[in-house]
Image (cartoon, rainbow, N blue to C red):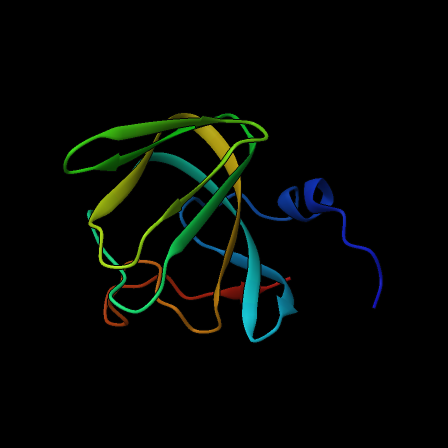
Length: 116
């Protein structure tokens, strides 16, 4: 296993809302993603949703409140809680999810994961 430079990995793609797997950890995918604009409202019935902001600012909107995250801050949305991330400008995130978790909560509408 070699070290992984997340900033380097993020320069390798430009698409938004498409998680790129950079490593596996105990049957979890460790991913980087570029986000901008609004994602769709969704929930994950069987798993929490982990967000760590590497660059920029992201609002995690929930039906009853909004949590604003800046670089170096993280938030975990509990399983079953409906939410949507919103980035007014491009932001970069680190995500950790059980392998195969659809980013929309629904395999039919989820973005395909890319390994880099």
